[in-house]
Image (cartoon, rainbow, N blue to C red; front, side, top):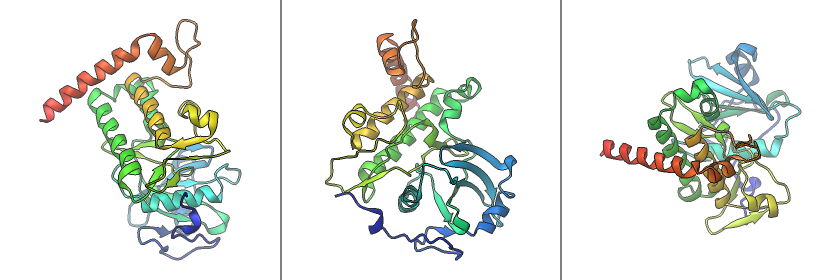
Length: 283
């Protein structure tokens, strides 16, 4: 059976103000601390916004830079997803997973406080003409390697097997050295090591990254994340979005376009060539 959140060591109250949580790796921040750190959630400090709500950059009193994810009152990400992300991100430790520093639940707020990732998310570079220039083959290979290591840890080397279920370019954050880190575990699920798959009546994830069997039958497994990683890999190679249409008639999705146009083969061949050159230089 899947591990439930109730069986995991975390307690979230509605008015927490202590300096430490039950997890020694996490801090419980006061609302005042986060308000001061983000300059009262000023628009100048706003990094972006998703369906969950805005993200702000901030600086703690000792100078540490942070990113604050503030869930909006109308967010689709409720308390269960919030607890899910706190629990998973706090217990998973890997250089290619984003680090959660703590959380705040004062004044009916639900805020997650992360390490600051100064180079934003991968989609900023992949799909922007100016950003693409900064991603030479060496950096793309470096990013692919990092995502691979993070995913391998989630599936094989962590204590429990984690299915992310929303692996995509915007959930790959980049640090100051362009090292990739997988983020956003709000809809992730925990498997025991002997579990292979599970079913759900609620399909979640992002269109274009979700595997066919998940859409058709509600079945998800480690293969679901592998499928999403495959789509992400093609995006890193081609620099194209999977939500757009391509081809002469503009009627082909990314996977269809690369396959029917023969570009998938050429892209893979080019990638393998650059990968081998990279390995030869390293060795």
